[in-house]
Image (cartoon, rainbow, N blue to C red; front, side, top):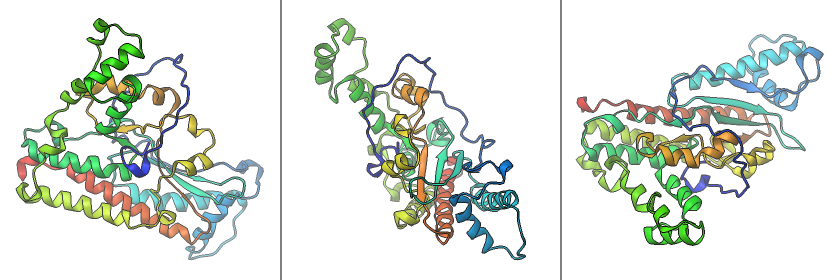
Length: 344
């Protein structure tokens, strides 16, 4: 899912098998970059020296335009060369990032569709919020930083915040109700619980009460009340966000369109609409996160951060430019999280 951003919200109603072994939705360090990779989907195995697929030809034209010493390649050598050059260009952009583990996959397209490049997030769980979650800095500072991340990160990362968690819990347990009395009535009338059982269940007000103060936007300080160092980090994040929003969808590596994803990745609609990352702290909401993420742990999450069709090789430079803008945005978020509030 593309989190709580309205441009990335996609709801699907499908029956989900609960017979699979339940796995806990547990946080893991998102800085584990061992799996970072760039892959070009298989076409004809190199062993058989088959013709290059449309995705190899597309990127091959871009690579050839940059070759300073033209030479002849066998098909197998051409595949290797194309993949090496493109991989180096992508990883050069992603190298400074440790906020999330991102993977690029070049798709050849089917039924007349042009090749496309998907950005996939391999990180899972709550991102490390650093000083925002654990420091003794004033609540108003921490809330201002958290609010900025919650509002902006879903534009690039597949990540959800508290609003989406609350909404999903409401759908699952309270028939979309959001106040205690209506939720209680729903559990009795529609779920067949007796009043004693209802008293043991989580109600909307109980969920809201679990939020630490730094998660509540109303507690964020106005910009003028923040120290200059924090104001600068927040400005950098907003500036990077504006640069990304100025891109046209067809030139944006981070563009998220659920219909387009299902068009290029058949069967993906079986996955959970929730993304694999969350800004909701496990310490306060572990049972709720386990509940709403069970489908994703069994069937996979909506882990695509962006998908961009490329009808011609001239679009690859635009794609790389937008990839860099997204990386700069994530670096700004990373710098905000890594800030030392004792030095402000």
